Length: 167
Image 1 (cartoon, one colour):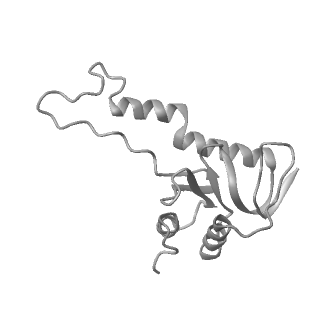
Image 2 (spheres, one colour):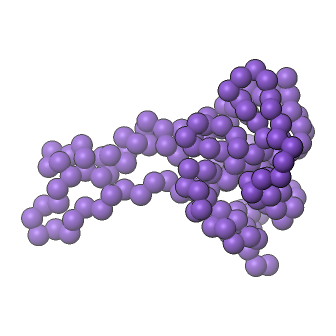
């Protein structure tokens, strides 16, 4: 089974449920796609469930593939390995139990991952946590030759809730 176009997905079963109502997230994805028309895909991933809240793609893609992308995004931001690294940085697994040495400033809690960027042979992936909803990530896929700075500044601006970056 494959999907095409702007669809809200429920990948928890074998069927796809398409939302016909315009939501805040559908508007955000539509605005990003209109501002950056070269994108192959744009969507929002719920980090609690590892599922798409909203997704717009060019072309068709198998549902299980899209589900893996959402689950992988969740793992990148809040997976077991990330939590372990944050616990070590927090000092909670250190011999001193996270206490700073005498005379040193107190340890600060490790901040969550807010942004990831990676490139494959043909694609550029940018994922940014939404400021207004930290449990959601705005994720875009663009051609590898795209202008990273332009896309990144716009995605950061949208994720911060301010719309497209100034030209």
